[in-house]
Image 1 (cartoon, rainbow, N blue to C red):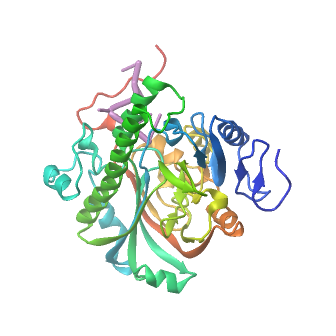
Image 2: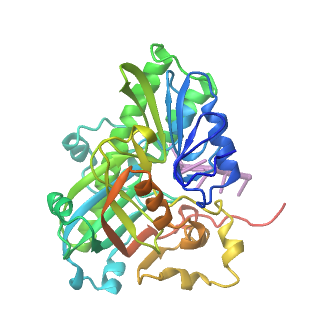
Image 3: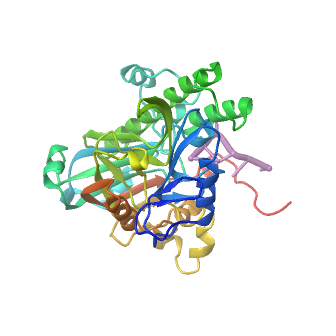
Length: 394
DNA sequence: ATGTTC
């Protein structure tokens, strides 16, 4: 199927895979990439080195098409990564007290939502009680320390301080994006939308609202976490990795879909590893047309959700997973999620980033080490007052 | 991924 070249490979469908020959990519993900590349109106399809199977369509991929495919963006419209420079000196952070202070980020924010929405020009939605909540899956808020600076000039240009902690937030549009996708799928199935149609305009308008909501969500998550720690911070970047947008492509107006693909045309981005590995702050190259102006958005899952517990529980108890190989601490009181997001469930981020660098798509500015990863305090269904769900078969 | 799934 693939040529035995070292760098990017051309698949039989015409899709491009940005990965060297010995980088492991699951067969199912490649099948999904090839199938998607053959959809009507598809001009180009790219699998990034974190490519892994999704629900029908692959994650870690970018697609350029003459039409709009809402299902390619998926349910978490606007999901992305935001990075803050905090005021907290690395040597001043004591993990135990910090962890004790980080409580209750799952519930509705208790501040003045109306004022906050006005301040950020955010229209009200039916999902605003979830504003400022991280959510589940691979979402997190992580306090990080700079491990190594490889490009001092660019690092300094970003106004980053290697002595002070960073905060990386990965979250999206929660129930809002889900409802937007469900609405369009209910009406049009997985069919492509003509960009000039009323259906496309309605979808795009709601999609753009979800982008704003998701960005605001990351902002409020950071605010809540920083308030809990009694510190302040400034945002250095915020990028969406799930979206569709109109692009001018060699003189033609086309639609670029990113599904788990970081933009290469919006300045530096963070490509996070797992909670047990480094993350990479990278500078995208000037010309990234090869990868549809996109980069990997993370390490990429190696094991499917729900698979990790059975694979790991014999050798690692839940408590073992609350500290990591790099000395980081983890807050995750949902046992299934604790296993699902174990470092072993992910591919190696070093290889993923090396594939991008070797393809000429980016260079590394700095590496970041996880200090404290916040996932969830309690699964929603086990919060006080909630009924314990029955287990086992009927 | 999901105010999820009983």
